[in-house]
Image (cartoon, rainbow, N blue to C red):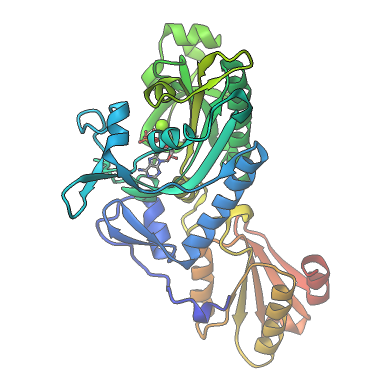
Length: 415
Ligand code: ATP
Ligand code: MG
């Protein structure tokens, strides 16, 4: 894409009321727009990052047998009364609205209820199980605190997968597969080094749930990390019993601030009981379905990457989720422009995601914008580089500048 056509521009300052670093950088670089506190729109650059994160998650969910669907955000009150979660004193984040006839609707903050109800229409026998379904869907939560930029918003995309298994054993096997898929996801988006599988409160059906917590001072959680075992314990559940269960000693753990980027949960028969989601087994005996839920927030991942990988100059995207792989900068005009246009066309033909800064601006401004936007690889074409028939290459996460002959550049990067 030609940057002269990109309708967003970088800006010097973020809105005064924006206190989160991730949102400050993302707003200044033109990735998101703040509508109101805790509500952000995604602009072309930001949407490209989101779509890449979604793509990575989708691939992992498909690889463990997930089937993608999409449920509605508008929710029937009756369904939520069935599980006892309609009441505002039970769930304090509800957004509710009304039809013209005054009957109430809820804006879904999660989807266990409608999905269990839906699946109960299709599952009859052991042959119909297991079922693994997931979606990328907008959730609404009336969060009290919304000071973390796009890491905690009142309207956000969530990937939520739900598993429906015949028995505990089948459930556990899938649960472990999902856990591995989550590890892959956090490695692929560039948060692997800083993300820990964290033992957290499990509810009434299993002792623990597993959170994926990324170390950052921008997080709102506190965890105790065991570097040797590569696991952590959420402060909320840390006690002697948990330490014994995991064979850990308190003195070997380091307390860190962190953000929950993902959460996987065994639900047992809580929802299948409420919605009478049963099946008949091989001998014709009626049994309840065992469920699990597996959530992840693509925007929270994007915000977390902005927090932990950025530097004083701006954003630093890993190639896997960068809005573009190459930022091509033209300095000057005339011959440089002809050559740079030529390289741009060739990059496009090779299917490389390239942002071409073809704007008529000073070099200093272009470099500053490039650093702020954070595309992994910068390629500069100028009269000076052309004197040696070269381009200048610099990676965003390093200070080294490399001069490479155009012929070599083409061999290395063009297909
Ligand atoms: P938290 O404790 O941070 O409020 P949660 O436990 O309520 O999160 P879940 O219901 O487990 O969150 O949601 C699954 C995932 O969705 C979370 O791990 C997170 O990545 C994402 N998520 C949850 N709430 C938000 C939000 N308000 N804004 C953006 N992403 C969110
Ligand atoms: Mg959670």
